[in-house]
Image (tube, rainbow, N blue to C red):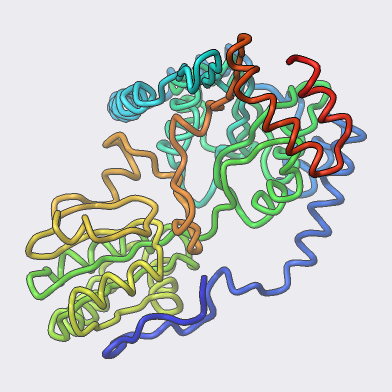
Length: 424
């Protein structure tokens, strides 16, 4: 993120700690991950079992979840939880299907006899990392597995930590995982990237995880595709004087309970709303069961900024480029139309981040740490490739060969010149 932020009138609450993406030394994590990757690449399942014992304290008698274990996890799933999970799956699937319809093949005749086009080709095999985390996040497999299946990927596998809640296995099953493996951490990324005796090598790895998972994705990227490098979660709210302090505080703390490094903030044109929100957050923390996590995130990475006007508020929001961005202004749609940098936008007071986190249909795997300035989040398009093609008849050759011959000659590329001239 650029160092220079737009000028603010004031900050009612400052960050008390460096940003989670402050570039601090990660050499120990990188060295550990490299060791894990090298071991899994050369020793396969043996290394996976070794690191599962070392890091997860789990003895893996079987790496793959069997059909019987899938059925048992599904049978043990609370009926209402299953209905809610299936509701989320249907919403995510419907939105992904609608998005896929906008990604169309192309075929044009650019010049007489010069035909150009592209095809939409699904990634063949995808690996989804499903985090264990502090809570069993049943929405996590929905967001990574369902769009891949909608895209038409031939095989979609899931890896989740050995100690993950059985409901997570059920969630992977319901979301369409072709195979499920009990492997977590960097060793899971390595197994999916390189393949082992049990786990097939994939073409792309998606899904968020901890610092070791993130570093593993960074190191395997190249021969294997990745979605993005996800940092701690973020939520910012832009609001004018019509904002409701109680609602804003509630939404900020809902996201803050994800992790002690979650970044949460309010950007407003109203000092009165800023001060009221600060007081309301402190009041709500007193009765929040997840206050040890949410309170730590708020204390270290919470921010309330006051801007002179909406233009400054929008400029500061675009500078932050938050993962989740809520708009609580008098004309929320008009304000939203002016915003450019965000992972996902929540327009109006009725659109809570929690709805997208769980079940409304948009994907909750989103860019963090300012990456929203150049990329969007995970979506059905992440699982297809737009591959171009061309074909020519004699008229097309007559049009493009002469300039290609001349350009090749001017560049001193005699082989190119000959190939271009050969078809004349």
